[in-house]
Amino acid sequence: MKNRISPPSLPGLPFRVLLCLAMTLTIPINALSMPKIALFTTGGTIQSKGDDRLTLFEYRAGRVPPDELLADLPELKDIAEIEVHEISNVGSGNINTERLLRLARHLNQTLDRRDIDGAVVTHGTSTLEETAYFLHLTVKSAKPVVVVGAMRPFTAISRDGPYNLYNAVRTAGTPSAAGMGVMIVLNDTIHSARFATKGHTYHVETFVSREHGPIGYVDSDQVVFYRRLITRHTTNSEFDISKVESLPQVDIVYGYQEASAAPIPALVADGASGIVYASGSPAFSDAFLAAQSNGVVIVRSDRKGAGRVVLSDSAAARAIITSDNLNPQKSRILLRLALTQTTNPAEIQRMFNEY
Ligand code: ASP
Image 1 (spheres, protein in one colour):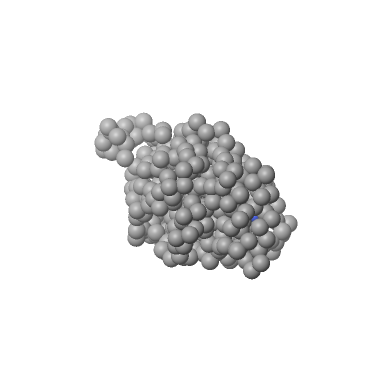
Image 2 (tube, helix red, strand yellow):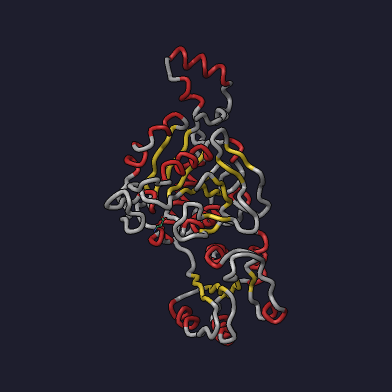
């Protein structure tokens, strides 16, 4: 299988000059035409092992270090030069603020280097969309950044990890992927971090971009894109985590028939600066008023997984913010970043409209 990754641009040195130089110095010619990709590893199923080849569920995280991941996929050497940065080796439920900030900072420093063409991040799929959206808003580079995971452990029959990783590296090394914001690649499909969500508990085609569809595909002959985003991200984002040591606490409350308001004051007492609610319940109103009087910002999202949240006039008059069509877990990410800049509801609403 051939993939068409064009040579990365080498500012100041025409490719023919480099080619002659390579021939004189006997540098392998493909080393000049290959992109250099920074691989950031965080863990997840893609780096997990089970007891045998049929163990698809009860496997253990943290078992596959980056060198084993790469040794298992020698084909990568033909398409990219890989530089490894290990951030963690944990299930995605253990990705916390410290790891998120460290990942984003390392990515920004590394992508700033002229010799790096793009980056790939391995991640557990359960909260992958949260990290991907966080990076979409905080990476300050137009170079391609791809977050990748797997639904089947490293040891399973028909494991999906190696080809997902191969395709993620191909995508990160593709010049036309620049400026697309952070992407999620699994199952030969390229999703935008803005729209993708994990949509199935265990099938390999788990990621879906429900209303908007994928932005491209990683086909066997080439990486193809069909759309660009108009929402703000990466180089056009106002969020700067370079000097941030922590992020405000934001929690999520779920609405259902006869939902109790008890979690709301408990979360305020726990230190929440913001609460996102996934659909309403009559009991929530008074608790939200009390939370707001303590300075807590309230955002309404929805549990349906598609569609914009349109607020009633009375909710808008009570300074409730609408999440547009961001799901609750991504609304939480945006609200945490928004609260690093302001607590003004009108200003935070502007951010939800733009990102
Ligand atoms: N439990 C895993 C995680 O999110 C699931 C996965 O990686 O697919 O880390």
